[in-house]
Length: 152
Image (tube, rainbow, N blue to C red; front, side, top):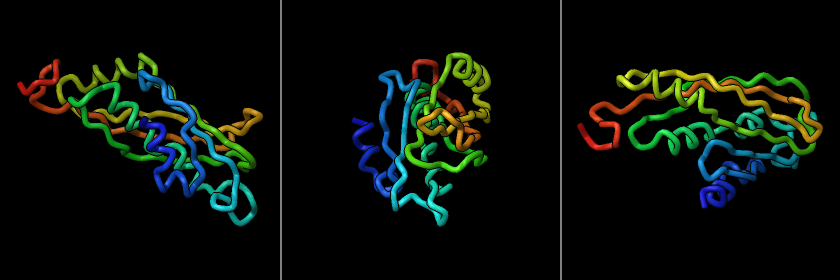
């Protein structure tokens, strides 16, 4: 259901971004974007803003579902490094591993904020990395919440 809703969300429709897969446990999401007139730049390659938009808001959604309602999760900052012109279809896969999740839980267990860095590669159909995105996620365990989610 979430995948279907994201695929009709106006910013994604306008950029041509499609959510292709969301794992049932929210540990993996795959998105892609085909080159078309609405996401093409002056020289005929993927517009940089559309490439960056491919990476937003997936980590926030994934972390919110996995960590649950007792956590606040926000995008803190992000940057993109353009490595090659994007032509044709490009795609990105977001994977959350247990090591990152354990570190996030450990760093936030006392209610402290944690800024966690994630790297996402945007690739073309030949597997070449056309852009590398760094995203810093703000994560904080809500205060006065017990481990089972009830107010303490």
